[in-house]
Length: 146
Image 1 (cartoon, rainbow, N blue to C red):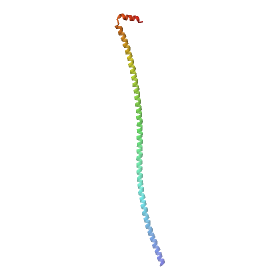
Image 2: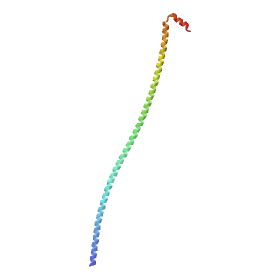
Image 3: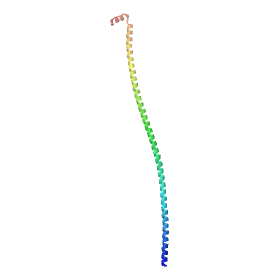
């Protein structure tokens, strides 16, 4: 009987150990399951962040492309404006030069006309003085001139 009791107790001990092991495995399973759920939640949050970052990156790339496009247009327009300004300055310089040349020509023409007027005036005075002198003096002058 002692052997029977000993076997019975060993059997009860094995059953208790197995029961305890099953409970521990259940707790470990629950703990592992909770850990896996937490990791899955964290992975989902990380995936959401990655998706948001990808969207932000795509938006930033589009904005950068648009900024490059606007910069290129602005640079092109700046060059066009510089070309127009250079052309306008050249045109103004040409016009100024032409105006100065015209003023010089007008001044030379006025001097020439003034000289002609003085010469004509002198010729008229001579002619008038000849016409106003008496006939005797005219003949004397004519005979005295070669």
